Length: 255
Image (cartoon, rainbow, N blue to C red; front, side, top):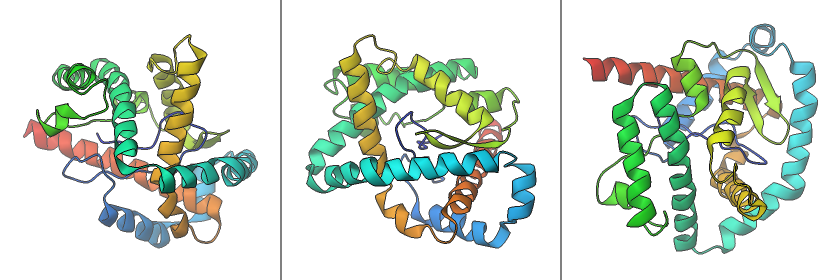
């Protein structure tokens, strides 16, 4: 599974689609397909009854998150995106990805996928040493060890746990009961967030927030109409896409 935008951060855009080539970069064609499917299939009455029973609570939290984003997160992310040299941003993304690989490895083991766990642990070992602490993604560029993004939400799904209702988490954004639980577990096993050194923990959260928000600045222009409904449907459509793609890859690999 590829990088979704589910890192614990002050803001989180609702999705980061993965292409069938298993790349970590968002696929614009998939993005367009997801957006079109929202307009073609969205039934807000049915959605509210079946997946969003807490809409009356979710909306105020969503509005609060949007205010925080508008006042603080987006301006800093825009400045970061425009002024930071590309090579610096690449190094930062690689370091964040290297820390994330530790979380991914834990979830690989919990899912019983020891082969992928070996690959992801290998990524950590190679990038932490040859990659100068993760600044360079040597594991991918040289050893062709591809990036995965298995979080505890995917682990719970692997164990047969249903998504549960749609929820909006304060400062974290769109989620479901299952994915929200996964977010907090992943934070517990993330060595940077779990660090007793507040400087390390705060720096990681701040930089990860800027990097994540900056990555999705251009997606803001795609939001039309009721932004709450648009983001909710986009998040749920992407979650459906990820689950469908995962099952297709499992079937393919078994074949």
